[in-house]
Amino acid sequence: MVEVDYDYLEATLCNLSGKTPLAERFRALFTLKNIADARSIDIIAKALSDESALLKHELAYCLGQIGNPTANDVLSRVLGDMNEDEMVRHEAAEAMGAIGSKESIPVLEKYLDDASESVAETCVLAIDKIRYDHDPKNVAEREANKSLYNSVDPAPPATTLSVKELGEQLVDTSLPLFKRYRAMFGLREIGNAEAVEQLAKGLKDKSALFRHEVAYVFGQLQHPASVPALTETLKDSNEQYMVRHEAAEALGSIATPEVLQTLLEYSKDDERVVRESCMVALDMYEYETSGEFQYANGLEAQNKDNMHSLKLQ
Image (cartoon, rainbow, N blue to C red; front, side, top):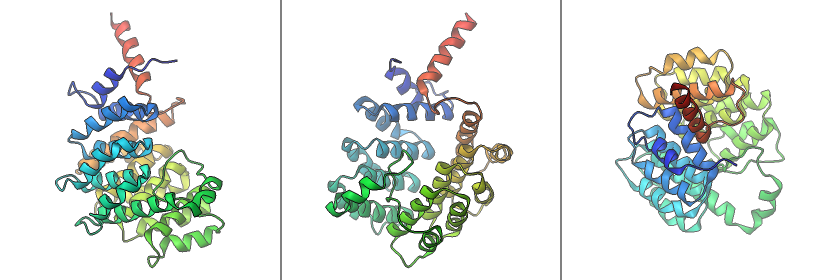
């Protein structure tokens, strides 16, 4: 069993040296997410003072995935900070929904009319998810339809519907956002080329939040059929940065040969979030093509650093 060096992980994630590459910090973050104890949560919360919106967004995401209600206080502070990047505030709201505390509902309700459409929409989704999770009528459905993916999603996957029916619900803007998200995750669970084709239609939705979630789902699916749509999204300079960032990371996860040059090109993008996302995606691409067992093993990175030091001595 590998001993956890929290001091190393904290120094890496919080960039105490000022010289740690972003990809290495992401590896440390996801190592802490997998450990998921109180010390890990404290370190992740501490890193929320960083200047990188991309990193802070990912920190909030990980706190939501860990699911410990002790993180609600720091997440609510992030959500309420009007000087914070909207991508980070949105992720804080989504994380509160993932944690699922009923006490978070009044906090989320404060931002239903937020100036940021993405934040407001996320708060609607988070409230709907918390209410769904706490409704006794949904217990059986939740147990019977657990996701194939190891993630806490903004909405549970819809079941019993065909790909065509799910695709129709996905693009039907007259439906509540929560129901459309359920269709999105239902298509993800099916995961074939036909489902990818339907999901790609969501990348043309009027909601940036919705488009960003489709790109995220494509990253989970890792289906090569999604590469053209994701590449088009990343290359669209008129697209919002939170959508382009998610497209970049999805391409890094899929890691087919043709995405490498695209990621290299846009790692020099004018938009910082996009640029940094491509750097992280290139690290993911390297992992996916390397045969390593687990991405983002910060302890393994430490061991490699130690071995490198020994070789230099």
